[in-house]
Image 1 (cartoon, rainbow, N blue to C red):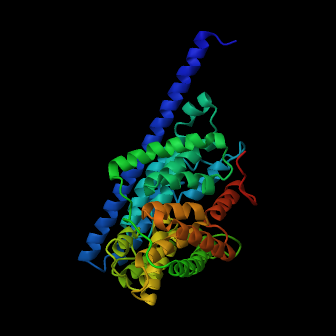
Image 2: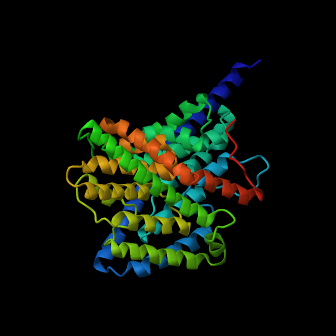
Image 3: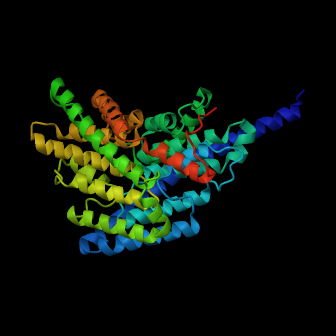
Length: 440
């Protein structure tokens, strides 16, 4: 029987655990804002350098990539790559697994610094996928204080932190909830949904308080007849689905499996591989007058808000630059570049169809379709784009585009993040991981 003193101690412990969780969620929001500011500053500084000396990326991008790789391997092991597969691996850790954690404050700090360095060197990467690993790392840092007091599993903290990170990075809280369910942990218990939503709300509140309440890319409205919208959805879904599936297939076939030709090269000559990737990206940037570098957000804004046409070769050049950046294995994700590639595909379809086609809708549909094709997470993808363009009026079109593009891509390639996570598990455990273990 509990004594009043024991009951008081338990209540104090629960209160301290709750405060620690709130503090961690707020810290995720603050880290996301700091991360965004660092990446934006580094990207704009690169643009300024490139404007003064257009040839500079041929030197800065390869050398910057090599420096980033060396620093990551030297001090921040575990911060390589996008971040989402690493969190998936930690979600499937068994009690007997002894590998070094892929989520920690050291990795979070390294992820922020190295991703900013890579993007500031001209690599076509994004900060949204790294924000998942950063958020999960921050949440994992308070698991001892929270876990024993509230009987919350470590996996729940990782899901909550990763979802809060994606929500704060995109400034899209609803997408954070769906990302947690659809991508990180499809079988998370319903009783933990409050934990996830609390983390998302706190992180999102901090992000919106510091960056504003406006959507990323203004507002996209329905224009044209119903038949026109249907045709645009079909064209967007098919084109984005095929290209997104091929994009994913190229990454996986080069790095995973018995026929992976790049993995042995990265093992034997990691710095040479990064340097070659940097030169390819610099060439793509030179062809597009710098548009292929960085996250691609400025180019999306130019197309959506200012209705400026990009050259037809922007989409293929950005795709090649993002492919080279992903194959380099430097810290950074493909979420933002995938949106930029999708926007470029929509711009190309608009150029083909002429002035009669609604440019904004096409770009939004293709952004949604290409992101859904790459991630094969259609619900998360259409919600991200819907919230970013304030596109509630086109939500049905976004839903159909995401579902169709994801289905087309699935016929071409297995899902990117899940396949990468399985490969990491196989290498860490030393045997074949046939499937990620579902949440119990």
